[in-house]
Length: 360
Image 1 (cartoon, rainbow, N blue to C red):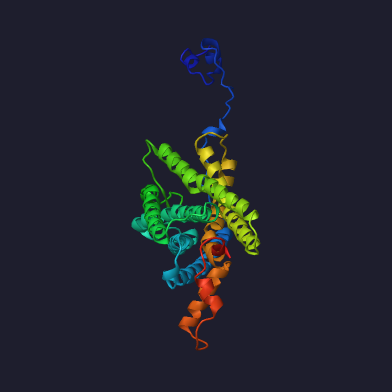
Image 2 (cartoon, rainbow, N blue to C red):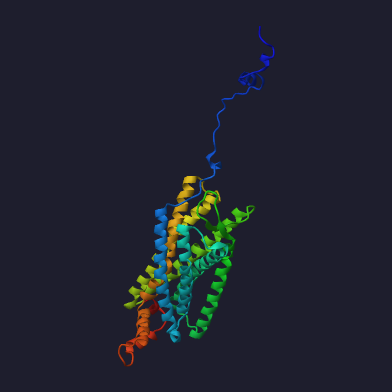
């Protein structure tokens, strides 16, 4: 005879649920992969070493090259043009950018070990000079357009004063655009990864702040400067094609080199950051594979973009015959080889007019 108390002890509730609630325990679930957090992106140790070495090489090339350009410009204060002033400020911007490379190269292999204050300061300097260097490139392209195409007839003293005022505005604008860098802090991860210097916005509006800073970087740091440079140099080349003289071909080669260097250095990094912005704004289908691929592309192309700070002295100075003449004249004044007056060609080249000869 069955015990009535044992009838109440059910070891299998499936029949009970099926009868009372029409419920099945064999229900299958489909996991939405978009709701799963991606793993933190990390790079290999070998890649970190390669990028660290590249940063050091860029630093060692950029500092001497820009110092030489600055000394040559300062040694010819009597013959400065508006483009020379923009070039001098570009040299300062590139040197300040290069001075941040030792911090970044160390952080690549050892993490950020310099504290919160240096994290904010280094990021602020880097962001400010990111904007100012590109804006000074735009100023040079506009000045060449005004001199060659529009044949500006304003007095040189007025143009010099105007160019200094423009430089002050560019520096102020660069500092203002870089203020979001103050949100950078040292971030210590829980998985024992190396500490990093990253943006840490408030959680309530982090996405909005990050999207706003990215849009400013895309527009003012690449798209608008690129449009202005393409327009100015395009019209300038068109004017040079209608002029006669042996200097025309050299001038067009340098203009082409300027644009090619700008595009090769900055386009990959800006395209990668634009794609990353679209992914973060959910304007593209998000996935962990795509996000990690974009993060890797940004990490690699950033080194190529920084290479531009040591390319500028070559393009805007060493390619030019006018600069080489000034450079050798400075060397001869510092370490005279022969006594005597400088040759007529040297004096005439030093006093050459602004225009096409600036590029030669």
